[in-house]
Image (tube, rainbow, N blue to C red; front, side):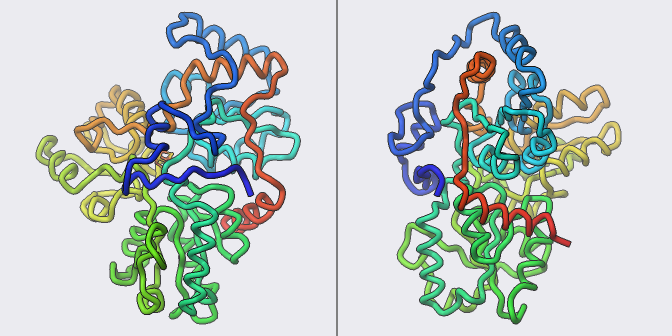
Length: 400
Ligand code: SF4
């Protein structure tokens, strides 16, 4: 088992973690939300950029800095490579000479990097409070309980788990142990097709999709032509997931009741509003958005797909993008010179608050500590969890 996962049903009721996400209080049962163990530089220190640069130069090839697309500009400027979580983990594995992998992202991403890199490489998360609210919505205990519910309903042997990359190492290991695979937002369709083929009878095979109900539903309905009635939502906060045995037997997709707090904010009104505000706009959204948003959009795809679509877009085209705001702002600035108008899909600000925990003071503190020989904020997955999680990841890599 990896470190204890704090419970976060942000859509249900306020929890201590909701305060953690806002940078207040601490969760004593978790390594996340603890105070920084060292002396953080002041955010107003005018030398932060020079200090980060100096520490990085001193470390040389020993350090490799990964920057997720949703990170702040002040952090991204120090990234050796940028990308989504899976690409970054693979990039780190391809740099075995780097002893320290500094992951500017969130906790589950650092875990995945630790799973995919060698034992000699040490993965570091600059702020241990940088969790992911979606990943935290499925804990190992809750998922084990769900499996018991499926067994009691007599359907467990027909169920193949598919876990989104945005899940803890424990959930990835559960998936590996039960014959399932991991997926990303780019290959979710292929992962579902593969999973349906694993059962003795594809017509009765079911998928338990963890932890993002929206990606699971959107892929099943949009890409595989299933109906909304084929999907049921398992709520871990209700007895038996809030489902009857008959509902479980009839379902083809059992969707975990989790969601991304950033992409879940976009609504059908956001789409209608931007179409009224920006005539001729193309609406391009991430598949973590709600089904009605995805159904109303012109195009749907992962962050990599969003970037490639904008790169290929003709001059003068107009785009409303439904994903995290740091990325949208960077893309808007990048393509302004090519006369491509890029706006954020919603009128309200929509940063990923946990991604934003990684700021320049934390990065400076991390790099300077490493340069002085102090290994800080290491993320390490235990061997058994790693073995089963890797099994699930390897099944993903082998997807046709
Ligand atoms: S954007 Fe959503 S899924 Fe990604 S780290 Fe933030 S909360 Fe998690």
